[in-house]
Image 1 (cartoon, rainbow, N blue to C red):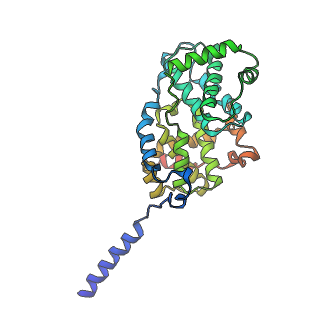
Image 2 (cartoon, one colour):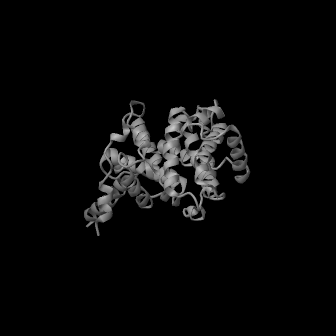
Image 3 (cartoon, rainbow, N blue to C red):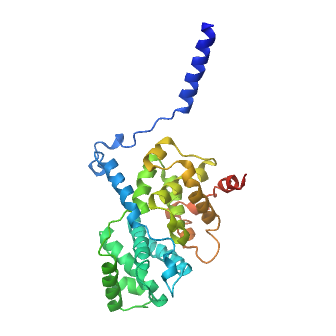
Length: 298
């Protein structure tokens, strides 16, 4: 009788050991790196999570625009991703550019002939906020085939800053990407694929319904699934992102769809960018189609 009870207890203990997954200390290795701000990095990201809801716009804001639509927005952002790469700008700059465009368009009616100007000025402002070396106004005019004058650029810059009340400090998906990639203990391949997927999502108007942190987590989750061929979302990723796997699936499946069609249609800027050696030919990676098959099962 005693032996039987012992065996039952042992089995329970073994099950507990198998199920329990430790949460990795992702900051322990950076205690001597002052740039990692280990002492308050968790507080910093808690603040980002609290503030991100204020950076979001209504996912239906295009309804108030009479002369531009979501397709035009997609064309603009696809082009700006290429411009961003051409000028070799920082990752932060691209995400802030898109954030500024959406926040501005959600508050200001714009004629379609001025939409490209909105995009250029948003990138100019993002550069001033994020970059050490900023492209001059003349360069932006040239890249738009001289569609606008210097005066028009400066007038739009003034209008955009006043409309947004000079607030440039909202967290974008980029800050969450860097943190969550660290939680995923990523290598360069995973990092590039994650950014490929989230840049595809930047182009899509329907993705505005997701908060920046969820977009970042879903991009990394989808990239892990693509590379490994099976679902993967560790307890460490869940802890640092605050998202469980089932909370990511809707967004992730949309990203898989974007990945599948990235090389088709007219908007292939992101695919072409990530088909180069500079980005490790990442766009050639197979999409995680099995995530879509899981959705179809009853």
